[in-house]
Structures are given as C-alpha cells and as structure tokens.
Length: 507
Ligand code: NDP
Ligand code: HEM
View 1: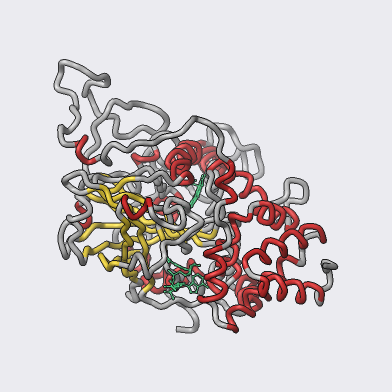
View 2: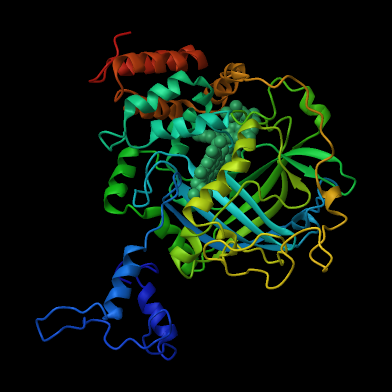
C-alpha cells in the first residue's frame, strides 16, 4: 500500500466510481464552459475583456469560498451513521428514539478541538467537542457534547471572556499563557475541568478513542408528563487511548496535523466502523432536592455509585462525508433542538446555550441554515417563516400568517403534553454571582485522591507545570493557590516542580 491509506487514495477511488458518469464542464447556470484553463484575450498577449464570464465567475466564486469558521470548535471532522436503541425507555421518555429495542435513528456526528483555528493541529491539549445530530421522525435532536462530563464555568455570560483568554492575543496574534492562567485562577469553578484537561485525557489519540458526554443535566418526560432529570454519556467501544507523552503529541502535530481527521476517515473507509455505547444516568426531582451538590451545575458530575450508568443504546459511524464543506463545515448543531420527551433543565449554562448556537449559525451560514440538506429534518416542516438569503423550501403558496382561514398548519393538539410539566421557580430577579463560589473543590479532590493513580498524578503535575510556567510570576502564584485548595499534596507538588523550572515562581 506504500502508506497510501484511504484518505490518500480518495481521488483514485472517485475516478473508479465515476469514470463513465461525468458529463461536460459547465458553469453553475449549466452553460458549457469553453476553455476552463484559458482566459479570453485580445490577441495572444492582449487584455482580458470583462465579457470573459468564465474567468469572472471562476475568480468571483473563489473569493467567496470561505465562510467564517466557527468562533470555537473550528477544526473538526464529521461522519454519519445510526443509533440503535437497546433498552425501551418509555418509562422515562416518550422520545421515539428510545421507544423500542432495535429502533434505529440516523445520526450525524462532529468531533472538534476548541481553541484552534480551522487549520490547527489535532493533537493539542484541548477539550474535544463531540456532537450528535439525531434525524428523528419528530424532528432534529442535537446533543452538542464534549469528551468531558463537566465544563469550565456555570454562567453563559462568562463564555466569551473565557474563550478570549484561550485564543489569540489581539496584539501578538499568538496564544497568551498569562491570559489563559489568569482567567482560570480567577475563576476556580474551572478547576475540575482544568484537571481533566491536563490529565492524560486532555490529548486523545484520535476521535475514535474518547468518550462523549452531553454534560448538562437534561430532562426526560414520559407520556404521563412525568419528568426525570438525566445525563447522556457515550463510551467508546474502541477503548480510551491518549497521547500520554505530550512530546509525542507535539511531534505528531508537526508531522501530521490532521492526525485525528485522517484516523476517523480511514477507519470508516476501511469499514472498521467506530462505535460508542450509549448510557444515561437518571435522578428524580425528589432526589435532586437532596444532593450535597447542585445537580444542575455543569462543573459537577453525578457520582456513579449513586446514579449508575444505564445502558440504553449504541451508535455506529459507517459513512464518511461525501463532501467535507457541504456536510461537515455546514453542519450546524443547536442545543435547543430537543424532540418530544427530551427537555432542558435549569442548568444556567445550558439556558445560555439554548440561545447561542442558532444565533451563531445565522451569522456563519445564514438565516436559512436549517434548509441545508445536512441540517434538514427528515419530517416535513410547516410554519410561517419565509424568505431570507438562500431560501430554498419557501413553502409554496401556504398561508404565511396565523391564524388564517385557508387551512394553514395548525399546532398538533398533543404538542402541549410533550413539554415538561409546569415548573415553579422562586426568587427575586437579581444577579447571583455567589454561585461562582459554590463547592468548587470537592469533586476535583475526589478526582485527585481516588481516580488518578500515582503515575497519572505525576503526568498531570508535569503537564500543568509545563503550561503554568509560561505565565508570569503573580499568575503562577494564584494558580498554585487554586490547586492547593484541591489538595495540599497537589499544591506542594506543583510548587516544588515550578521552583525547579526556568521561569519560576518564588513561593
Ligand atoms: P468512579 O470512581 O465511579 O469512576 C471514575 C471515573 O473517572 C470513570 O468514569 C473514569 O472513566 C473516569 N476517569 C478516569 N481517568 C480520567 C481522566 N484522566 N479524566 C477524566 N475522567 C477520568 O467515579 P465517581 O462517579 O465516583 O466520581 C469520582 C470522580 O471521578 C469525580 O469527582 C470526577 O472527578 C471523576 N469522573 C466522574 C464521572 C461521573 O460521571 N461520575 C465521569 C468522569 C470522571 P472510565 O470509566 O472511562 O475509566
Ligand atoms: C460550538 C457557544 C458551552 C460544545 C459552539 C459555537 C458557539 C458556542 C457559538 C459555534 C457554533 C457554530 O458556529 O457552529 C457556547 C456557549 C457556551 C458553550 C455560549 C456556554 C454558555 C459548551 C459546552 C459544550 C459545548 C458546555 C459541551 C458540553 C460545543 C461543541 C461545538 C460548540 C461540540 C461544536 C459543534 C459542531 O461540531 O459544530 N459553542 N458553547 N459548548 N460547542 Fe459550545
């Protein structure tokens, strides 16, 4: 094979399949192109007239090839497949995805790193996005998750500032480690996620070898409109594998920046289809009132001992995109896409995300992004929205106002019963920043003391030191103080390692 893997052979494969099928070249209006490689000129070395529409169209279209990249999660890979239900969940949810054992739902998935730009390397230390789009008969359900069950913050208003601190400095246009650790150390609610990030799982060995988590607390609603709180977890059947040695990851980043994109593409092309086993954790509303932590706080996990994983399905990715731009770059996930029987929760961060994504898509892809084939639901859509850029399914002559006397779409009389039961919220409208200080250290302490073995602890400390030492002295001090609150042992190890490094904090 001479190292010519499926990704390298893509054009040859296309040729084999299409040799007899391709017609003559034409422009986008279907008019024959006379000469794709020569401009029209007045004489052999003369001027190009504006009427050379072939050249004008080629350049004009080329200028517009790039759309804005995603503001976060720009670099990624996508694939398609199906979800199979292995446990009837009708006791919890009326969702058709979980209505019977063996029920299959087509899915799209996208994996991504967060902070880097579209061309950045795959083997960097960063959380990984792990999104799933379920094309159900009741509409699109998007589960826009990560490879971690937790997150850096509890309030959506912090997200843009957090991301600013992780991306390029506006003056130098390079990553700024002062900003990175400054934000983290001033927001200790991030410490749990930061410890996951600097542990081995911060650099997965490709997208196939990591778990995924819906991360937030969601709700399941059954046909009696009974609500159960829930978490979604998908565990890799390929086994967790990471770049435990960050120097190896750096080498791969240099030699093969698209390592994870290729790994996924080649596995699927070679019919070595990756799969994940899908679990839920459930918590009743009564249990939620009696936890030692806030079950709607995304910086916390639900301990497995008290809320065991329930196996409910499996998904397989068995189709590569037929075109990356059309099917992956234009793929748009929205946490507010929730189908009957699956709802949101008072998780403050989720509330912000319910707004954020569709607004981002309207900017990046245009107001009719949901009409693009990869984003369109498989069931018909009937509503009163019309027009806008790139409108394709404009609903013909159906009434575009409601109510109307012409048989336009009516709400399904059952729709109200699909929504969560009425919920009571009490309290004064105000700002409540005190939630930022809630119980930030207890679960990170368990992670340090109980989950990591000695060697994993050493690697975590080394990884942290490697990055903390790049910040200024004052920020190093604040950062070490934060980790000291997790554990004296962790604080002491960081301090002693940092004292041995070049740009050191004198503690
Ligand atoms: P358990 O003791 O039952 O299990 C520990 C969990 O940690 C497992 O899910 C394991 O994943 C995961 N894990 C192991 N190494 C890492 C790592 N480097 N980064 C992230 N996760 C890792 O968990 P508990 O429920 O009792 O929670 C104890 C602590 O474990 C929590 O405070 C939290 O820090 C961490 N954790 C908990 C999770 C949860 O949902 N409860 C999920 C992930 C982590 P695997 O099964 O693949 O080995
Ligand atoms: C992408 C906002 C938290 C997972 C994005 C995008 C925005 C955004 C604007 C780009 C969307 C696009 O252009 O397509 C936010 C905000 C958050 C938040 C405001 C907090 C308030 C989270 C959390 C998770 C997450 C907690 C995971 C649990 C993702 C993923 C993508 C993404 C996976 C990429 C989706 C794709 O593959 O296209 N986010 N995000 N985000 N976000 Fe978030």
